[in-house]
Length: 425
Image 1 (cartoon, rainbow, N blue to C red):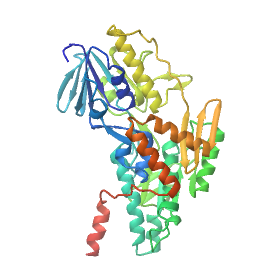
Image 2: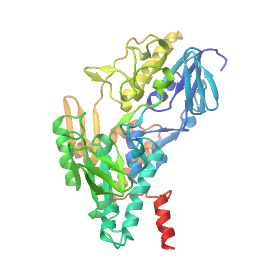
Image 3: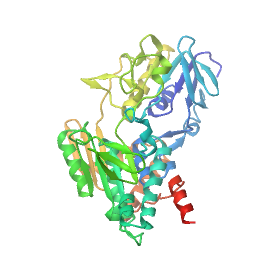
């Protein structure tokens, strides 16, 4: 890397990785910083959380992905701050100077000021979140098998999902299928199919970003799976006991949060006003006002689109990453300036369960089995590499035929479980 022109990218999600790959032929030193060593295919995290896939099926080492791109240096580090005036990124392992900076940090779950709820109701944004949720779900069935009274059995077999967007719908449907099929014949003292799966949402319909008819279909499909759907209801997490609605407590051993997202840190780094979720307003070229050498993309960016803003989904992040790469190539004299960023919406997809999904492509809408196959093909298409799509497709086909859920490893033990074991001794 002999050139002095430096581009720093923070975050190796869809947006950051696409931007780096788009700069493959740039005469520049590119530094990609991420506090994790892997790129994660977030849309399939729920499959890991519900024992359908292993973490390695949906995550790949960043260094492996970029091994053949000689102008990139991958840094495993945690960004502490950004000094826009002196153009440097400060991390826990040192400072990195830049001529242009791309911030693609993504978002994490938001508890709307109740951050202490996270311990009892984990969200689903990282591999560690997915394996923690998987652990809690599987341990709940194990504890129900050895519970000493009926009330404790019911508490262990109650799974409460808060938030009716795509993640909440997918998680609730997958837990119901896990209980009704994969675990059906594996326990002796309990019937896993008797598990109560509840999905609560604060507005009058599920999947608010979808047309009303598809939202209604999703609710109906979930209820056919045995999921109890509660709408227009605000929920409070009641420690490890469960949840509270309208002042009434519902004991539940497993509570999963899918109700909101926020963008951490970026507002602090740039000392800039953001929207309530922490998204940074950007210009037509995705740069920050007052800092034209800084670009924000993906979930961290607030980009106007029609009467709303660009949604925080993978295709949008990839489009933004590609656009910024083209912009920087033009600045380096290696391409044509792409002009203003124009988001092209490819549609919304959500799976509800086996043979059931909803797809909204604007004028074209699909639901049911065909939509489920479309959803599967679309997600496999976006998987990086050749090995991963083949493995995921093969595993999905096998699970489809056998109703199997093969990735059911409990990789850690909850402290509460350890205490109960000690009490027995």
